[in-house]
Length: 299
Picture 1 (tube, rainbow, N blue to C red):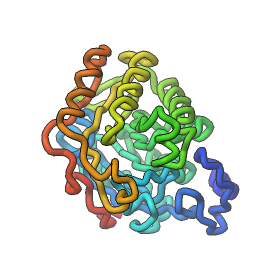
Picture 2 (cartoon, rainbow, N blue to C red; picture 1 turned 30 degrees about the horizontal axis):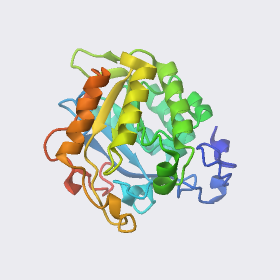
Picture 3 (tube, helix red, strand yellow; picture 1 turned 45 degrees about the horizontal axis):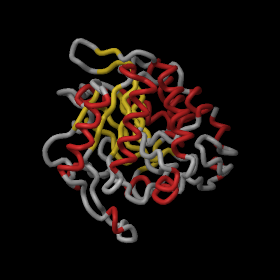
Picture 4 (cartoon, rainbow, N blue to C red; picture 1 turned 180 degrees about the horizontal axis):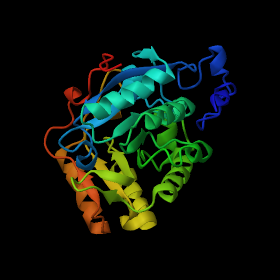
């Protein structure tokens, strides 16, 4: 499986980089596993974090590369520490010993072969937690199929329907086509959502949508599409935490937070459509402090 990295087509970019030979893919990473943080994380959806926290592993690099990325230090390969597959397996077990509700893999797409090998090692050593695959939604179905039996909860984004917007901010005009096919595969794999006695999701799909300033209609179209396609088979997380960080000066329309009225209009629309399985954010979530420090904690 590791040989998949020799001519890498794990993500929709199909860059064919020989990452084993040290070439950098579109994701900004070679075959070396780079992890920026591994710790209990309290800022996910309630059924992911719960009271004990989600055992979150932030991988460096990203195959999408949005101009407004909230985790830009790691998505652009600027932070993180190289670890072996064996060490990654140990990290999973350490997070379980700390009381994590699950193992939460953030931006994992470009490391799928290594992650599968690490999960096999940690499961053989006793790992019993649900595995959460936390991604941009820009995934290849063929790569997702490798994860069947390894992932219990899929936590993808669905960022855009509008091709021009996807091209402008993520250089991915095919984003919706690719992501909608990926989500269909995720739902096919895990089926109906399940929760344990503490309300933690042990199986299912939660789709996140981060509302961008000025694109309320695209957000409404996404919510409408998701509910008409999947109904109550999925949960939807409607997020208002967009924060303009360094790098968006070239895009003045993105250089602000969304307003309370914009977010209220979107939530009201979700209710009008009939969406009930949803998470919304209240209070001041659009703060840079909402983003954790990528200081190699737990690595």
